[in-house]
Image (cartoon, rainbow, N blue to C red; front, top):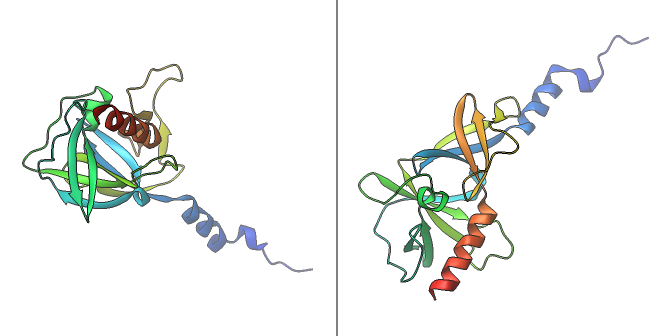
Length: 172
């Protein structure tokens, strides 16, 4: 009879399973709140430059910004969600995000932020939904969360992409 521990119970296997459950996230300060995004959605962080205005666009669609040959819509999350008035300026950054929706005509869009994003590790143990099931969330928000006791919002990127598409179509 063998006294070996099954492979699934060894410390090395258990720690590897925990590592696989962790994902890299990014906390971004935008619109007076923190947003939690998967790191994989971020293409680049740029210094803020005033965007080219889009006539007839809603307040949250600040205009177009240039990036690597692309003309990207720049949004202000605080304005879009109704949480805060927001404009770019000294110290502002622009985060270029990869579009998630297959229906999106643009592969990227840009988000106005305050300061640099902060890389974080997100595990099942460190992330809790913070809010009631019947709570009405702001526009473009999927959930309120706590990450290691830090409050953040999970943006609904697909809904935001759809809102951008509608706003651009109406402004055209």
